[in-house]
Length: 396
Image (cartoon, rainbow, N blue to C red; front, side, top):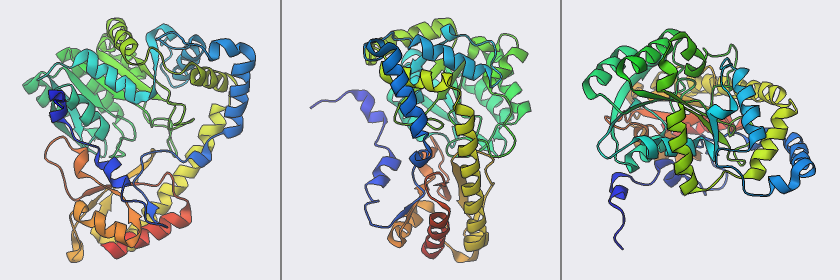
């Protein structure tokens, strides 16, 4: 068969390929990028399902508007208002099949072959694959513990005149980094200055451990008049309610949103009406604050446990900044004491010892740092975290 030329730009996910190796019984996995399903509010979701079927069963089980189920769009607008984006209306957002579809729609509507797109180095692997599929030339912007380095970002924007800039400002995947307030405002200023769309991907912003993060770019955009015209915001319920519902949303300028709706019509007609009705009733019932409080507490304890174990078991052979939220610890092998300094070399040895992680190199669109690795603490309980880190030290 002669496949589309665009497939020459991408390859299968390194993370998905890694999962094929995890069939060994008793393995401790720090590789997944998903939430712990054991913390899903099953009873609350069951109640929401029953309410959806009882109040409008026919509507919940029928096709729906491509833009999304009206009741859910209203609830999502209120949800965003509770996070500081108080001027967002239901008409300014569309519901997507996970935030991954929002990224796909942005790529379809914005990227032509050869267009420059700036992404963080490192960034979400699926975004690299998605943007490359549509022919984007990706440019890497360096990050540190405070997120993307805006002075370098400005230089790259001036040099490349990109079509888009893609950022995960809050508890990034894989970096765990959070963009500082000053840098957030600077990003908005740069978007306006260079008339360049900035995409804010925010699936983790509600998963803070202690103090809340700075306001989202969306919430801050009112402080930089005109910047909203160059900002798209992607949200998700996958990490905070249920990954299986596959619900996300896209907030964007009207013209872009209309194009995204058109492209979504070609893809799936509409996101599952039943899932949307369920989520609408769940949010309306007011159970989300208690759910988030529980999830934050559990993840904070697991992150702290993993951090302490890494310091104790691996010592100077590993370096990382303790995360303040999200699902990941982003670490770097130092090679101290003659230990391995290449995460891709360490990975098969770790699996032999019964523990898995994701090497960091695939998260870079250019100049990968082979010493980096991503460790997820989300789905392992405290004893498994302790045991998994011990096994990692043995492999090292």
